[in-house]
Image (cartoon, rainbow, N blue to C red; front, side):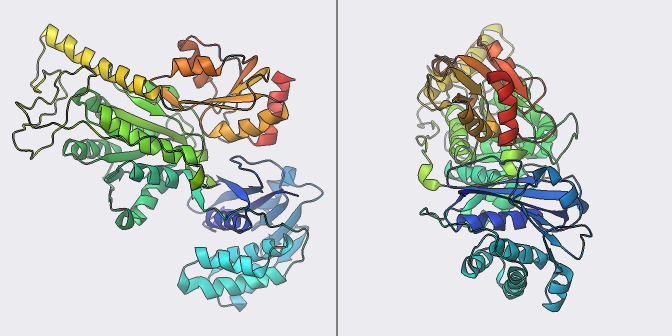
Length: 552
């Protein structure tokens, strides 16, 4: 066996997410590439939380429905997932909580009490039991705990993990692979590090799932990364603070979700008119309104493409995995500053909170970009007209420069004007920036292709559905075409990618086919829709079944 899936389930507050990441690290230590999907309701305590950790010899980024090991902290973790259990599944459960279980029952309450350990260490008992069932040595188990557990709690966790290890028997053997151990990282973490690589100096956010963890991650690493992290009182303050920082010359980014982005749209329009660079990480989740705040969706594509009043260029990118999240977050920030436009990094809960093996060797960084700065000659004109539409930047305090930022229609110096010729020239200047940005992006991998070009069938997808589509398409010998950039839309690259597409299906995590709608607007046929809109991403086997209906 070269692939394994483990589900761990319990109540909110029991550390299921942390335990899932530890399981991913356990397999990673043996050279496996891992992916973790985390599912939880919007509750501080209670409800049913679970994580599915999949490990494979090949790169992956999606889960499958069946599991090889089920780790259950309560009865719901068995009853809710019976469809995942098959003949070869090993069930390990907390005998202190589960009354109807088949498999190995661990008296976790007793173990924790006898080892004089905190209740949360019960996760380590499950981790130890998993290691034994999977034939993974105590040394690997110990190394994973030493890497993830704070020093003051390490000995207690090691003792409890040992009790779990001794409480079960080996069921199969996970053979080590001749591959390096890769770090496990979430999409939020990758996006944050990408922003820093792109020159981030300040991150401003109000916590909102699924980008809350990006705020927490950057705040925890702020000193090491030499950045400032600010938490204002609401999303309106967030966007305005970021615009103020950018006006003063500091590269800033913000994070939010759909509800927070609603409040930011006036500030977005301000950025468009005043030509102030700002980068927005927008994590999608189901709506309308509060919707299902801890679940996933791809429902805000047209919202971010059209947000704000008036007409102004913007850059919108939707990465599909953490390597793309890292690369394009960096590029989004740099493009924002080079062209003085808002840039939006469109993620979702699946990508933002999912855990992935991160292979830095596979990162193909785009060129470093710098903003155009004023050379100090003559009168400074903040909105000077140029061939490419980009005006040189100066910042307050620069000798000889009066720096104006104006949300009204304005002239080159920055004074408000309503004169017809000046207003027309200002609008044409903004459009020129958009065309310059589009021309530069022609050299970037704005559309990706996976699989053979002459397959006769093509699966179109975007964002976090990328890896489920890649694996499911292989079953049918189909290729996958994934757009990364949505504004300005790379029409030429898309046309070239779809040559010889054959039968086309468009896979999306929404009810209306938002990518399909955009493709039709651009003059392309999106093919038949394959949609899922229950707040969960496609499992690979689930998508295979859906594709069989339209491709077979």
